[in-house]
Image (cartoon, rainbow, N blue to C red):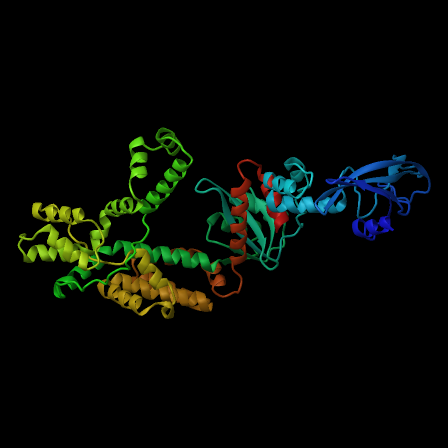
Length: 531
């Protein structure tokens, strides 16, 4: 009855008969006999008729209730009676339990292969030890075999690069866009390698790519009849770079406009709102807290001053000061050492007060006035700025203008997603510079074409940009004209490289976990098996 129960648990619908079960607290040993029908010869595939002998195999099975399971399986050796077959005898294999040249069951091999696919070598071996599975990193990696690649390329093929070492060496990943599966990994991103792959795997009708010239050259050489589709995300990224470059070039216009607004406006800056009573945790304060906790924890263990200084790599005087000083006093000292940047929002007010008093004002009074307006820095920083004003060496207060990246984000985002304050600041930027205004109008028109797939308007947009747009926008329009057919297809058809970008992120994660200690072949195998 016990044997029947073990058979039902360990060998469901498998042709074996359990004869004996024994074991200890760590290992469970199961002795079983094969009851399968006569097997076929692995060479000539003829059915066996005669038994030569029997022998016992030892197989590792999946653990049961945190105990290792070892199966001692008695199998039969058959004669091959076919005269033309070179094999005289062969050993039967029990379907679902044993395989040739393996000392683990089919189920355990599947477990180990799945673990190796997800984790690789050393991490997979560590997990196997925790699960009571006997497998080293070399054995796990031997279980990884790259799946067979189809002879023909998918109908919609996506291609993109990924970095082995950013800025130095790159590879290429090929994706079936319709199925969302990786179909190939190439060791570089050259046009020759990609063209050779396309020649060996014909059949691609649509190829989604970014604007890399190497892939374009390969497609024109090896698959001239395929329709190229430029990726919409990369087009918006290139447009964003052109807008940001325009904002960089005309930053002086923004600063001049802001300074003119400051002169014509009210000289007295608006009062500042007081920040919360608790100051933000700065790097100095965090370091002080952690250092205080580490030193006092070691003092409780009766460590000496010298031992603590050696362990934490500090001066003995520093350790003694943290031992003898209260934490609140140390934090107060840390707040006074905050960087001078805390004074930046209040410099305009200090300069105005200094000018009104013709230099006859005390630093303590200015410190108290700025502190009432929200300043939380030290008194010494205010005194240093006041001394620089008297000596004539103080840096002029620059106008508060948005950064080029900030302006670009306002332009590239949909209008309805901007706040009222952001719309007001963008309006001021447009009033300050005609070129930025023109770049903003063109960028929003192009983004609208991308979002609504209005590729029929592309040629007219390029003509307008080449007429009166700033230089970076004209350069972007020129690149679009050089790749006009692919860009038009990208703004018309539903295909894009979004699926490819997702696989690139996964490839980069795998590469960072293993590449450099393992070969490209292993990386390719893991990419293909995980997909």
